[in-house]
Length: 70
Image 1: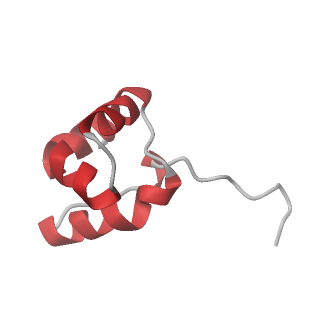
Image 2 (image 1 turned 90 degrees about the vertical axis):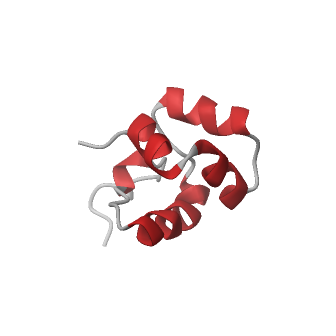
């Protein structure tokens, strides 16, 4: 099962940083924390598509809808 560390290794931390407009330290902090910000999803998903790799939503800090919400 892929995690943030493997994702960063596959895509390259510099590539992620460039795609989302942050520095390498920010990427590294989120890799260590185990979740990328939800706002990074589309940019990282695009990088994944370019490389033919999966982009699991569980690696991003999305807010779950309230229970019972439709």
